[in-house]
Image 1 (cartoon, rainbow, N blue to C red):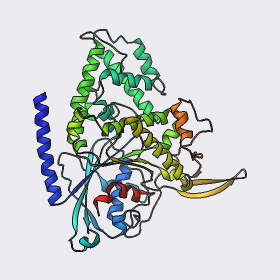
Image 2: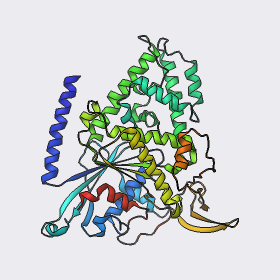
Image 3: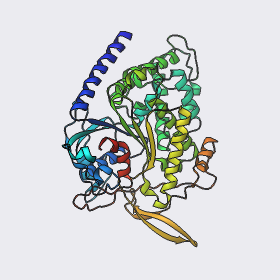
Length: 470
């Protein structure tokens, strides 16, 4: 195993060196990882980003577009022949058609290449010819990113973490009851193992539906062709040790097999090549779910940042030699709030990132936080209600197709008023609840040269790509 790992590391080093030489002397490549936690809108983000790179009329804060340095953008075949292509054309047609709908959500990895024709700026740039920069967008489920933290945990550590979290989550009652009735030290009986794994999987689905973020292992949520396999047939158990042949010993073996056969190949073959990353987060959904969901989001972000900065002697440090240079945490669905509340939403995201950085002892990549809407679905209005002026958003409800005005609640200017109760384990918000609404895409008419309407998508693009396009 040591020899195999060494061989793989040397091979990846040679491949990486060849890629670096190619990028330096020919056409540079930016590999942008796009992932998101539950209901965050990854497909919509990628579709809108690409459409607004092709037609840049709505990108004033994206300096390469504003200055004219970005002369053109066009789609090209992707470099990875074994990875499915991101279906940009179908998603854009669904979002901007006569009867717009939301595209299908991400269920597996996909990729898309956008080539950017850039004229270098400044005195020396005027003497240079335009160059081509390739943007390779890698789309993958957020649940897979959370698996990165598993690679440095033992089965006992992961079990302890998840059992603590499950006891505070809605929808875990059936699994906890099954766990109470099980005997992990008894001889393995496959039907019992499958029943316990199914109950755990159902608890993960319930937690995700309730707005919780950490639902690991990720393939339990999106099993694909692995559904029903032993590598997805385990669950967290109380601490052992367990005798040979016992349920607990087999679950530990399967957990290690999951890390080795499922999680590691993804990070080795795809994640290790990413140099920019955006993590999309439905922070409004977590606020609506309550303090427990917000605290779970805080812990999840800590795990994510810890994974991006592994220890010097870890397996991850060997494969992540190419450090992720920039990580953007973006609160999506900013169009569900009036613009007067966007600073509060951004402040909450910044506080979550700052706290996660401190708790993870993270250093290295540049991180940022902002609130965005990759596709704007609402318009704003102000109404007087019971003598009080309310800033609202109006849109088409996804479930009924009717127009409705919506007030999500007033976010506090001090993010500690949200993070404090979450950290202290409060059952609910003391000053009222924060609402959540599901809006359908709005009908839009695009002028020539304009991409879909958005909120701060141009600023997100500037943070992630701007320094490489100058």
